[in-house]
Each structure stands twice: as structure tokens, then as C-alpha cells.
Amino acid sequence: MKTKSSHHKSENRFRFLTFAERLANVNIDVIHRIDRTGSLSEEVETYFYEGLQKWKDLNATENFGTFLREVNGLCQSFPQLVHHQNAVVQALKAHLQVPNSLALQPLLDLVVQLARDLQADFYPHFPEFFSIVTGLLQTQDTDQLEWAFCCLAYLYKYLWKPLIRDIQNVYSMYSTLLAHKKEHIKNFAAESFAFLMRKVPDHSALFDWMFTDLEQNPDKRDGLGRLLFQMCRGVRMQFHSCAGRVLPIMLEKLGPRTKVGPPLPWADVSHSLCQMVQWVGDHMLKEHCPVVWDSL
Image (tube, rainbow, N blue to C red):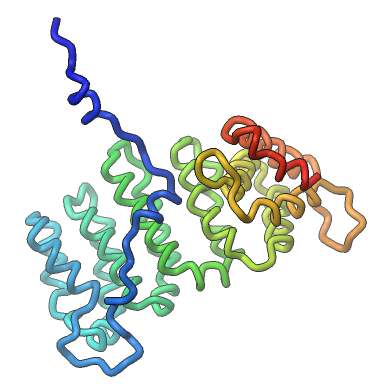
């Protein structure tokens, strides 16, 4: 019996990148980015229009062709795209919900390109797109899962400022994934939201709100523990630089406390923090754990 060559084995080795690694691999060339604040000519192309032209060549399906005919004349310049943004948004939402569409990959990419163009003006549309994209996670198609995850990852990257300003509403929407029955969806939920949590200015208030939510939603306890771990997790089995700052705040929530603050469901808080510690023990090197002891 023939055995595979070492070269062939090497070619077949792969691993899934974490959320942080995917973000690190995104190349955003801000130097050559179109200046939206300066004077714009009608000939300036948008990220969305550039994406349309790319996918017109790469996806020749009837599904994408129908979408292309609807929006192609609405987005060739930035002023034109702003004027027609509602029509473009409605077209994207409608076509993303076409059953068994063969155009999901380009459509999800174009959601991101529209967010890049509109930036903060895109945020009012975020909840509906979030609902549609997370609906696409209910599949065994790994390509579709990858496209949906990448779409969400890019949206968090480009919209993180308005997202953290509305963090409670965003968490209410997003935390349902922390109780999902599929482990890979819970993992992605924890990894992606952890990126946003690190940027929140008041972590004490955020943790109070998240722990209080457990009283009505105890099925999120394990997922929240995973989320807190991902927030503190860095690269190469080390802690993130925020860990020394946020770990003492987390542990303070074990209660009972003497400081002013809302009453928390202590048993649920303890459960989530125990889950976090378990994840730390499973995924961190012991030589990097002094940050934990210093927080006690």
C-alpha cells in the first residue's frame, strides 16, 4: 500500500484561524483609502461598486445577476450610493433571504463593502443585517458558515465605534448565540464579542449588566464564562494585555460587595467565573498565570 508523501501530507494540513487571527490578517490600506471628507467627483467609485464589478466576473449565477441588475445603477459614485442607500439595503436584505441562493458569498461581502462606504450611517441597518446573517449560521455547509462569520467579523471591525456606544443593545441581540446548542457558534460568538468588550470604557458597568442578565437567562452562563475567557485571552497561550485590568473587576462581582452597585445573581456569577477559570486552566501556560494571582 502506498503512503502519502510528506509533501502531500503538508499540503493537507490546515487549521481554522481564530477571530483575532482573522482580523490580524485583514489588510486595510488606509493610506490609499478614498477620502470621504474631501471634495468628491461623480467619477469616484465606491467600495460597494468595486465589489460589484469583482463579483460580476467571479459569480455568474442567475441569483447574483438578478441582484446586479437591481443595484448596478445606484452606486457608481459615493453621493449616488448615499442617495440610494435604502434601495441598496433593501435589495441586499431581500436577496440574502432567497432560499438556496448561489450568491451568498458575494452578497455577504457586499454588505461589508456597504458598511465601509457608509460607516456610521450604516449602523441603523446593523440589527436587521445581524438577524439575517446569523440566520445563515443554521447550516452544515462549512463554506456558508465561513462566509457568514467573515461578514460579521468585518462588520465588527469597521463599525466598532458605534457598536460599543450601543453595547447593551448589541449584547442583548448577540448574547443569544452564547446559549446556542452548537459549540462552534458559541465559540465564534465569544471570540467576536470579546473583541468589542475590550474597547468598552466602563467594564464594571458592563459586567454588572451582563451578570444581571443571567437572572432571566441562566442558559447563557457557560457561554458568558467562555466570553470572559476570550476577552482575557491573548496569543500563544498568553493573556491579553487587558487581563490585568479587567480580571480584578470580574472577580469583584463574585460578591457580596460593600461597594455601591446592583444586586447580582451570585450563584450564576460564580458559575460563569468558574467556567472562565476552567478555560484559563485548559488553554493558558502556567508561567503566564501570575496575572491571575495578582488579581486575587
